[in-house]
Length: 294
Image (cartoon, rainbow, N blue to C red):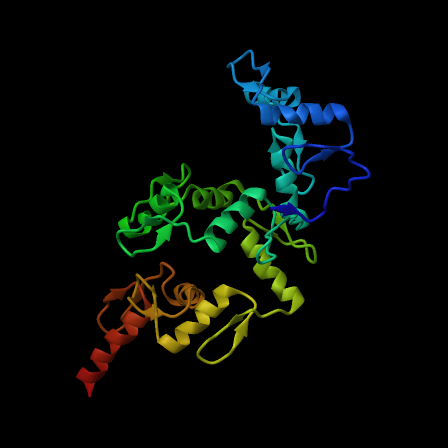
């Protein structure tokens, strides 16, 4: 693992003999060396947890006081830890300082890089799924995957009760209720709840159309648009109107249909006064009267 900007030896002359870190001041090196010795002389008087550095202890104490001094200038989020604050800022600035030595892919967090290296560049995955045979490098990753087969959704939204297989998915969903949209388009200032939605949106400004249909070659800026388009080829109509049981390829088409024909209105037959919740059902019924009158 390496950071994009290498340490400048001229400005950081005090090098750690155990790792790649270097420091401007000797006192900073001495403080850092405690991470290698295992010494943790700084103890929290509230819970007894010990730390190598006084500064880390001070940040830990904020868990007890509730203080969150790091405020994001782009959104409403606040943080206890300066490290979490810096990682979050990168989601707005687009900075990805951690680079994979093997393929060159870059990441916001060092933990994301380590996960990528384990999953993509090592074959050490000793935990197989008993349902599909897919292998994983950690028991926790296997457990999360198996929820898809078992249908388990242990994480429920406290606001609406919707359940999710992953805690991260629930956290993303909860932004719908809080109204927090931390990802801002630098071109038009439109805000999004997820970074993936911002990435898709930005393709509209750049003109990029990375999502290509394998059937006909038509390309789209958004993956969701490609999925909608593919219904044309496979003839799927997954969106069902509960009022008249009519099926539609696209959710937007279903909503338009409901607004125009099935939006809580009652449609009454002029021949027999029979009522229907949907105009399409009434039209079908009236064909019976026409056939009887022929």
